[in-house]
View 1 (spheres, one colour):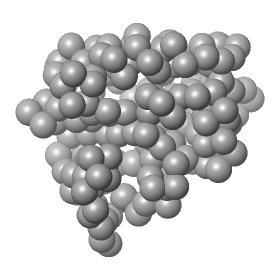
View 2 (spheres, helix red, strand yellow):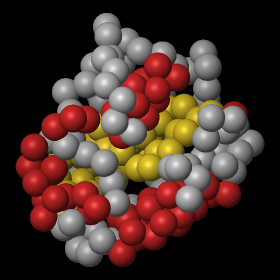
View 3 (spheres, rainbow, N blue to C red):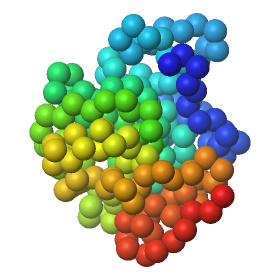
View 4 (cartoon, helix red, strand yellow):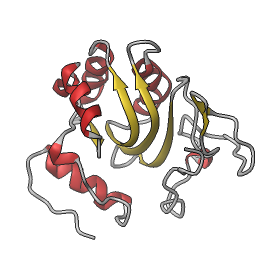
Length: 194
């Protein structure tokens, strides 16, 4: 786990720790000190802590004019024991909504497990963004994670599933990736090309 870095090829366009509007503004990182763990496994020091003991995040890109953000997660998402969605909503999403972000594209390919509880925070998050034509989308969710999310009924508030899986997003520029997801959510057929 310690060698899985957050995606860094968009750093020419955006760095969350240098963005005064970002909830991660001013964060300092070490390339050599590994302090954060998921259970007994150290993770790469570029991942950001937002209050969860088992789930970490990286804000890869934010565009306040377009109102979207692309985030990447790693770890175990546990709403049942540690209420991770509460931390994600209160510490990250709420701050970004205040700054004009209403479309949340969240890459979940490194979310290894999901333990659901109820859908209250997801409903609240959706209610906070829907009036601005906003949405929440989980991309590249592992099958067993997707099934647990569906069993928790968060699909009423969050876009995820087959249409948003197996997407080759890394070669894309962030705006193209966002436009592709936005078109899929709004029912306009677009193709993400390599």
